[in-house]
Length: 176
Length: 342
Image (cartoon, rainbow over all chains, first blue to last red; front, side, top):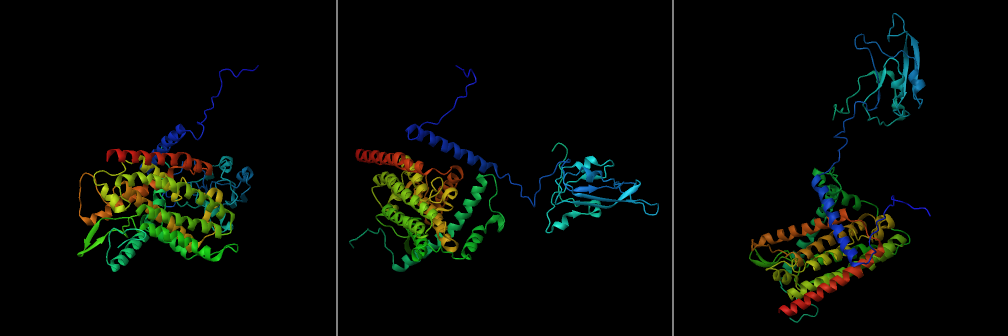
C-alpha cells in the first residue's frame, strides 16, 4: 500500500459548532479582530487622493510617446523608416515618409516623416516602437492621463508628439 | 393618583412636557446625521481609507447631501405592494425609535430658569418594559414593510427579521433582569441613581456583554444584519423602498443605534454619573450622557467594521443555545446573590 511518508499535510479543523469551548474561542477571536481593525484606525488612511496627489512614476514607466529632436541642430531624429510601425503589435502607428531637400531639411537623415501619427486609443504601451527605433527618435514618456471626450482626439500627430509634454506626472527619484 | 398602566416618577406642567418632547425630538433628529457621518468616516478609517471627504469641510455635509438626494427621489411603489401598509411601515419604524428615545434620561431634575425640569422625556416606573414594548412594535415596521412590498427578497428579509427580533429580545430582557434585581427599580432614573456607588458594568459585566450582543441583533446591525444581508437579499426588507420612505428606515436604524447606546449608558455606564466622586454642575449631565453614548456608538461602528455577517442558522443557534442560557444563568446568579446579601 502506498504511504504518504513524511509529507502529510495536517488539516486543521475548527471545533464542532455548538460547543461551549467554541463559543469561548469565537469570543477570543472577536476580540482579536477588534484589535486588528483598531490598529488600522490608528495607522491612518493609506489612500492617495488621486487627482490632487499622484504616485510618482518610475523612470522606465511607459506612458505617452515622445518624439525627439537633436538638441544642437533642432532637427528631428525621426527619419521616417517606419520600423516602429512594423514593430507595433497594435498597428497604431502611421508613418508617411518624404525626402529631405536642401531648402527644406527636417531631419538629419535622407528622409523625414511627413506624417507621423499614433492612435493612442489602440496603443497598448508595450514599448516595442522605442526598441525598434534605430535613432532613439521615439521614446515612451511618463504621461498617463490621456482620457479624452472624443476618440479622434486620441490620434496624436507629429506636432503633438514633438511638443514638450505637460509635466503632469511626478517622476520618482533614484532609489525612491 | 392611581396609575392604570404605570406610575410616572416626576410630573411637570403640560407645557414643559410639550417643550421637552420637541427638544428631545430635535436633539434626536440632529444626532442621526452625526452618527451617519461618524459611521461612514470611521468605517473608512477602519479600512485604511478616508471615507467621505468631498462634500463640505472634511465631508461634513455628506449626510445633508444623502438626505437631500433621498428626499428628492421618486416615491416608487411596486404594483404588487399593498398601498397603505407600504406607506405606513416606515412610519412605524421611525415612530417607535423616537418613542423609545423619550425615556432615556439625560440628567436628573434640574432647575432651568427656576422651573424644575427632568432632563428626560418621561420617567416611568416601567422603563425597560416600555423599551421592550416599543422594540416589539418596531418589529412591525420591518415585518409589514417587507410583507407589503410584495417582493420575495423583502419578504425573506422581513421573516428573518421577525425570527431574529423574537429570539434576541428574550436574551436582552434577561440580561437587563440582573440590573433590575440589583437596583430594585424599573425606573431608568432610579437605576442611574442606584449606580452612584459603582456602575453596573462592573458587577453585571456578563449582563453587559449579553445585552450588547443582543442589542446588535435588535438593531439589525452587523454582524447580525441578516434582515438586510445585501449579498443575498439585495437590501432585505427595504429592497422596494426608495426616496423618503427609505430615508425613514435609514433614520430609524440609526436612531435605534442611538437609543440602544442611551440604554446601555443608562443601565450599565451610570448615566450622567461620573466616577471618582466627581459631582459636576447639572448642566454637564447631558454632555456626560452624550459622551458615553458616543462611546457605545463607536463600539457599534467598530464591531461593524470588524465582524462578518453570521449565517442564519448560526444566528439562531447563537441566540438560543448560547446567549439565552448565559442570560438566564446571569439573572439566576444575580437573583441568588441579591437575596443572600440582603
